[in-house]
Image (cartoon, rainbow, N blue to C red; front, side, top):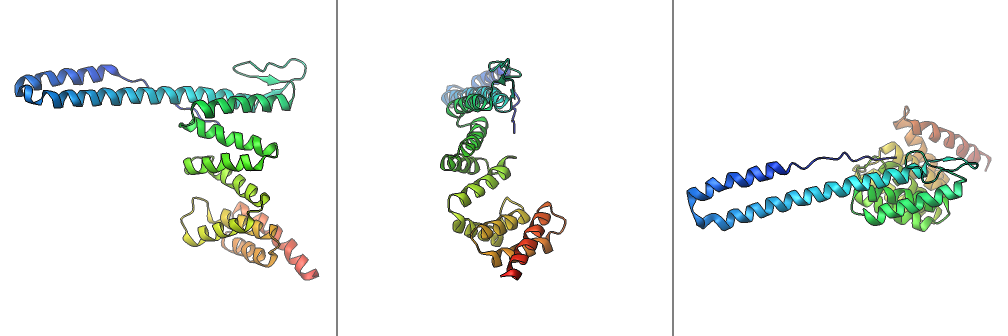
Length: 246
């Protein structure tokens, strides 16, 4: 789940040429418009400066995120770990790898929180928190990512993780209402078959098996070639068998 932001050069010569073009205009039309022109120049320079600053921060954030991702996915080498290797770090064990990755992701989130890199770092911090059993912290990280990065490639995975955490935290009834609303509204960023499968599994976790059967059946009927249909079909078989035995 890495993301590299391409560095772009700021062509300051173009700004200088623009300023030069204004000189002839001032000579032709007099001093009455000088203040307005100066104001435009200031705005142009400010915009160029802000663009340069933003792109510089984005590039630095991308580099910092890449370093954190390298640590997160690093190999284990108990005999000769190289945790500070900038290209291919290795760690003595999983605990030390996770600790280092968390440290680096926190640095990215703190330093570049307003950038894409900062948001992605937060998503990984959520994964680390969930793996450590801190579901509330995981939910906070993932919820923030979804709010800020709805169209991101990671949004689907993070949303599914968020649903699983909500179920584990006892928010199943609220999740059912949310999923039904999204299905009824038809404007969800998640595919309909994903919403159906998540609704069915959430209902099942709440012991509402009859409703889950209806949802799974709808998924199988409406999306027979979906990858989610196979899982729904398996759950249907088990739930129907249990209902027959009852």
